[in-house]
Length: 183
Image 1 (cartoon, rainbow, N blue to C red):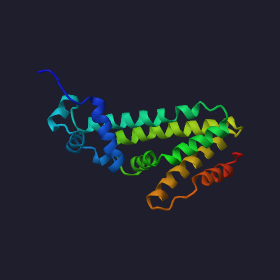
Image 2 (tube, helix red, strand yellow):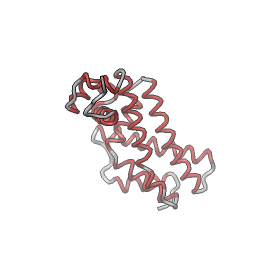
Image 3 (spheres, helix red, strand yellow):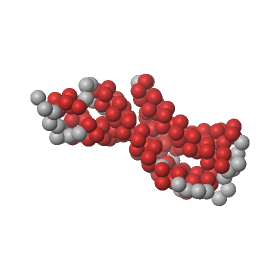
Image 4 (cartoon, rainbow, N blue to C red):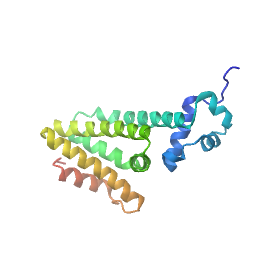
C-alpha cells in the first residue's frame, strides 16, 4: 500500500514543536498533534513509529530553528555589538526563551536533555567567543557567557511571573556593562 499522506514529516514535526512551545514537551502526543493539523491519527503512523519519534523530530526542528535564528547576528563583526544584538534577539524572543526554560526544567527525557544540551552549548560558545574577542581571558569569557545566559533564563522566569524589567534596552545595557562590555 503506497504511503499517501497529506502532511509531511516536517509538517508533523513543526506542529509538535508548536505544541511543545505552548505546553511543554509532555504535550507532544499523537492525538493533539493530529488534531492541530486536522489529520487522522492513523496517518501519523505512515511517517512515525511512535510518539517518541515525533518528539525527536520536534526537537530536531527546534534545535535547527534555535541555531539558525542567530546566524544573521553572528555576521556582526564587532563583538560588543554582536553581544548587544544577540541579547536583544534573545530577550525579545519570549516564546523561544520560555520553551528553552521549559525544556531545561520540565523533562527528564534523555532525548530532550540531549537537544537542550546541544542548543545551550551552542549558545554559550557563541557568547563566550564574543567575550574572548573583546579580550577577556578564557576563564572570564566562559564565566561571563554563563552569567549572561543565566540572566536570559532568569529573565524568562521573571517574565512568566510578570516581573520582567519593563525597559529591556536599559536592562540589557546595564547587564552588559556589569559584565565589562562598554556601550
